[in-house]
Length: 108
Image (cartoon, rainbow, N blue to C red):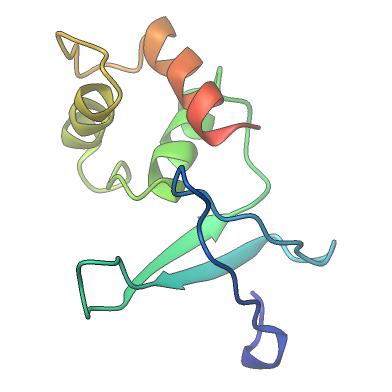
């Protein structure tokens, strides 16, 4: 994990994406942010080394990185992702269209 002495600060671009450079040995980090319409600080654990999106573990890890609670409520997380990204009607399963959209939105 990145220690407090290794903090990075960034702003989102027009699409809501953040780009930062992370030192090579780091495999996990915590992302903290405050949405524009909120005074509440949100913290998300992010894993940087993931299995391929073609594996369920890789798809679930990407959902988690994107803020969907796939490790605790997989069907709900998949449903919310599918709904949020226009995969309608939501199938609530990690199907090929969902994997493709995860790869597009999250990347490798």
